[in-house]
Amino acid sequence: MSLMGSLWTGVSGLQTSNNALNTTAHNMSNLDTKGYTRQQVAQSTRPYVTISKNAPAWKQLGLGVEYSMTRQERDVFLDKNYRRESGRSAFYDISTSTMEEIEYILGESEAGGSIEGHEFSESLSNFWTAIQELSKDPTSSVNQNLFVTRAYEFVSRASAVYKSLCQYQDNLNKSVIKEVNNLNSYAEEIEALNRKIVAIEAGDVERANDLRDRRNYLLDELAKLGNISYSEDITGYVNVRFEDVDLVKSGTVNRVDLYTDPKTGFYTPYWSMLANLDRDKDGNPIVTKEGIASAEVFDTTRQISSDLNTDIGSLMGILLARGDHRATYKEIQDYPPDADPTDPSQKEEGWYDIHISQSIVMNIQAEFDQLINAVVTKINGILAEEAEIAKEQGDTEYLRDENGEPWQLFTKVIDQEDWSVSNITINQRLRQNPALLKFRLNEHSEDNSTMEKLKAAFEEKIYTLNPNVETPLCFRDYYKNLVGQVANSGSVFRGIQESQTVATDALMNAREQVVGVSSDEELTNMIRYQNAYNASSRYINVISEMLEHILSTLGR
Image (cartoon, rainbow, N blue to C red; front, side, top):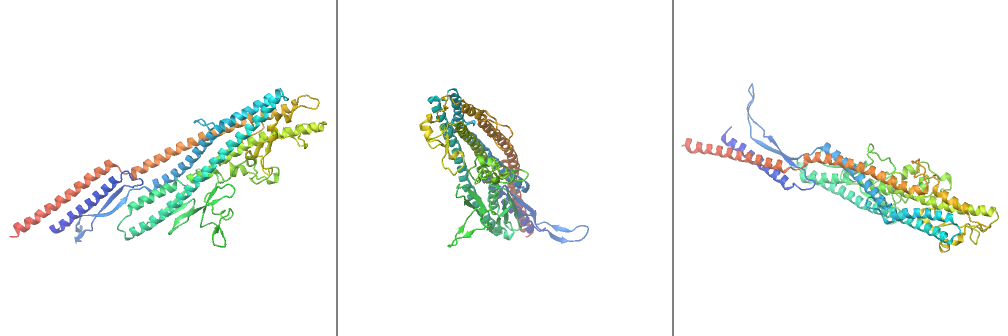
């Protein structure tokens, strides 16, 4: 090769080493940048100059090194696995925190529990004690007053616990707005980045690595919200699917909107492009439950399973934990919310398992409401039954008001509604004058029969928490077992969460070994590229001296 050509070989070394030094410096400056991916200069040989093709080998001269591209160091397999497992981890984080909150509301958490939970547990115990004291002397005005007072405390404190469960539901509901806004924001930014990346890389000269870093970070965040899949086409455009529906595709973003239930105020995410919406006279969409039925983002009635990938994403976790309405005792008996529990034809087999059991909050609401309903209806039933027995025996006034109606210790707030905890109150007349109950028969003897039935009502083991539990319980044990069930479920969720955190952290660490910037490694590279730069510089100096010698000495 001529000496002038050799100069070009040295220059190529200087340029490539300079690019490599700049890339290394860029890596070092972004050592703590969130979402940054380590970059590396790819080098290749320049095309050879062929002098001769004679056998046995061609005679060729090299023209030095060539900068090919600055590539990102990523592992597609680790990316997909990390995103899936981080989404699953987010799901169980929500489930665990929800269980811990319910433990607190019921008054049995490690932090001590809420006042409402402790007071309700105490009121149930006090109510039972009041019945025992009443049975000792049913005609005592003191015992009658204590009986009615404890009943009032029982209902009011039960209402406070149920209201706390509903308030937590509302808090989860507010979180849905934030999660959906983040989802739409990520999708729109990914689409904007897609356009920029395609435009920059269209010439096949430059790689938009920093923009790709941001896009990968957004995919990481999006994966925490739900189950995603994605693919990059030949132009560098990434198509994204969220819960098996196109979210970002071919230059468009399929936004997720929210339907607000008019009764509960609960939000339901739905795909705006897939909804079947009517329009008003001004052209504005009319969103109805029926119109979004086929466009809902999540199906919370599906079985939650890692095999089915239905336990992925914080948004799914929030919706499932919250449920879609306030659950009551009826649904444990497989009656839908609007059904009449006295009409067997309205019963829907499997309703509880499909719509209630998988929702953490709704399941506890239904089981708790079942306890209150059972206590209230049982005591009212005993009083009504004893009034009828007395009537058959000729006493038409015993345990009856002036209108001839049996006294009921508990009454409904709204007559048309069910005997649910939010619709139960104490009989105000009895609260003002407990002596109206009397508990004294015509022959002036004490009503021991009613007392025995009231005591038996608290002791008979005929109740179960839900259809999937076979252990029969009495009133006194029901709440303890409810709390124990929550504690056991919370322990299970915490175990899954811890295991999932370990798996996610392991994948993250493995990915960081690929994409992360190591200061020691980059400093080593910097020394190497600097030495390569110096070597190319010295090589050019040698060629320059040789040219100078030829021109100044041999050219005379």
